[in-house]
Image (cartoon, rainbow, N blue to C red; front, top):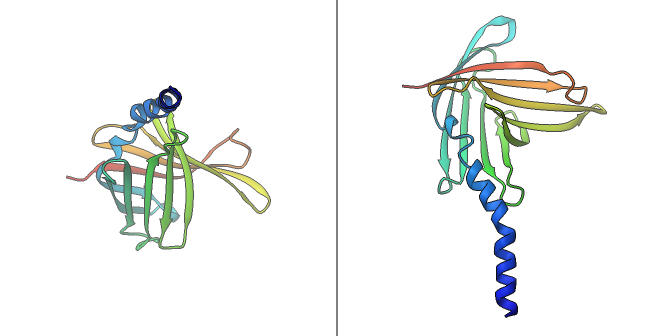
Length: 167
């Protein structure tokens, strides 16, 4: 009787996380694929890059492979892994790049937009950064890198990338 009761309690407490994970697992599916990207870099010079997003680990995670092909940052490469954390039911992403960058993010949705965000301290000041996927369509979307130093009261768009699906 005790084993059956324990099993039932464990099963019932696992249901909310499992249900949330299943409902949110497709949140970033729009991003999967091969993408061409462009943006205006330093001195308003148009730059180009590519991004490849694949499902990995039996479809449980997303792998990103980003590279810049023109402009001042030509040769820059970065990768990320994104997954729904089984404990919290929230999206998590880890970014690394060939400039020695490492950034952990937490993600989710606000209306039709998707995002990954993080907070950290720089020179004694709290900084918030957020990447926002917006204007999402099957063949294109806009990705904004934003930053706030006033607790999120105001946001500065640092980098806007226009994505189109590679044919």
